[in-house]
Image (cartoon, rainbow over all chains, first blue to last red; front, side, top):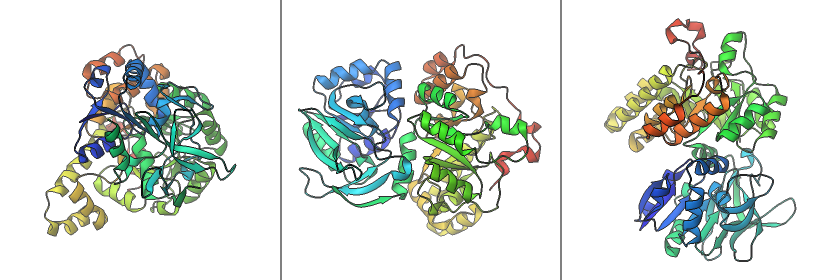
Length: 192
Length: 297
């Protein structure tokens, strides 16, 4: 299995290390040509505005959108979730608009509010140790989107999804690539 | 809440933010307008300052933390992380910056040091980045709790020679540790003046446990790509952008050269018609008191 990581900016090397550990071939993707022959794609953590801008300059938005709509399995983490989403609350930025959610950036606050915690995930027996770094959460979900994990906003008591699936698209607010737990990457390989 | 055992300010959370900045450019800015230009150009973070290093150099006197209203103005103007500098050893400036909500504190030799001791960075929830000229200095800073390292270079000169020296030195010293016998590691720690446990860790992993950016004197897209090819995880550009003829165009060019650092034709393309680069300073014209890199070893 050949898994690409969008390597414009961010922690793509950590993602590739996980997929290689799981026995897949991991390749860096920076150009539309490098999208060919992939069985799955990862959009890493990073700064979503930077990733979106570089993807626009290098003509990656349309090729990425076409491949994902045509069924290429994809996992987006943090900035990757934002980049996959249909829209962002408050900000205008380049997005793929393939995942039917509206995300809220920096939803938990600034870096001093970043945290790690054990998170209950639907379909997984044990909780995932999730690392949230200036993380987004999902503000609105579309009808075809399954919520696999959510957190409660202590202020309003509202639930906000932090891990969703829409067909072969997986997206997390947190960073599974920063821990030893490979279950979320395994899930991407299962849908591939 | 569907989460348990939630913890803030851990090593993973502090070092993790730096991981997300990798492959990116962090730009010095002095006001909201510059911060927006930097964000628009694709910066992964901005460094909020009262003056860029070249102006600190020209201005002389004591350089201190920026005015809180300046930092707040910049925080409110962008969605990307905002860093700010405290003086070396000035833990109260760091406390103030943390209270303002900055995302990273740079305990920086660009400002005037106040103590031979650096800040005890473990006491803070906000992460710190510190400069280093060699591996020993990097490990002392990590030992004090730094969650990210950058080369010191020679700030405000537009001359990348010192950053190159510092990066080469770190790489060489890391490589050397990996070939030493276990019996030799304590002597190596003594020689590096670095904590033994970190020396042992580097000998095993062959890399720093935190992200390492280049900083100090980067002025062109080719400078940024040079530092990336030497093995840095990303770059800080201080005076190089807003002291140049066309900051917006240069900022974009440096961002693109940092992404495509291995592609000479792309670097050539973005290097065309950038206008005037900042005027550089030759390092050997600096007196000992002008060498910021020798502060806070």
